[in-house]
Image (tube, rainbow, N blue to C red; front, top):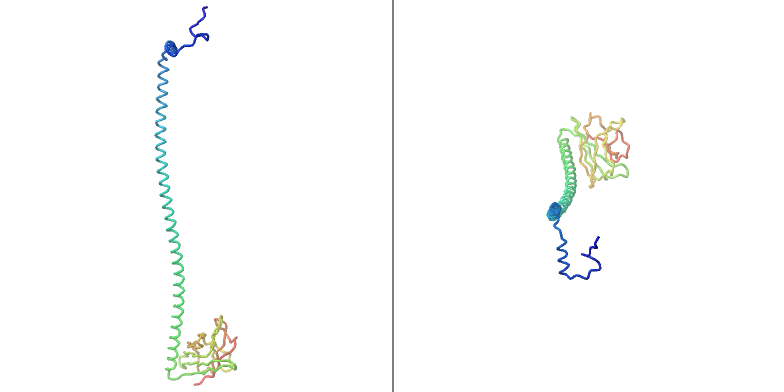
Length: 242
């Protein structure tokens, strides 16, 4: 078999023109199917690349929009939180104002109740004094005590009132109690009253049954709510005068 010396290692060096001519001579047209597959693959790659660029662009737009929306929502949340804090502070302020107002209303109601009681007591005194006959007892302090008073009783109806002056306030958890005394019988509760800081009081007493049988009145210092019989010190006492 003859040796092929078309291309050999011992062949003298070829110039560029000879190499180009040699490449052209040996070049072959690729099969049509292969070429179609290569072109189709190239077109698919190009389409995929374009779609990837489009998607990337869309995602960048979406991401930018989401970031903007997040900033807007964040700002809204911060603003709402600020307003919520203001509302909470206003609500607490209103609660404190309401407590203060209610305390003032309670105090005014107590003052009004006291004024009503004082007016009613004074009306009771005037009513008793206006009767055709009045039983009265001048109250004097026990030995070492202070103050004085007077009990007035309508002998027909038994309505009674007491007026005192110069007594010390009863103190926390204590109250003054009036007693009706019938000779040697046990004292009968006739009403409770308090003394203000000025040491005076005008109070209605419990209506006295059978006033003609009462011989004296006394005042003692008792626990708040009163007692069924005198348990504290007697501070005032006086006989009934017809």
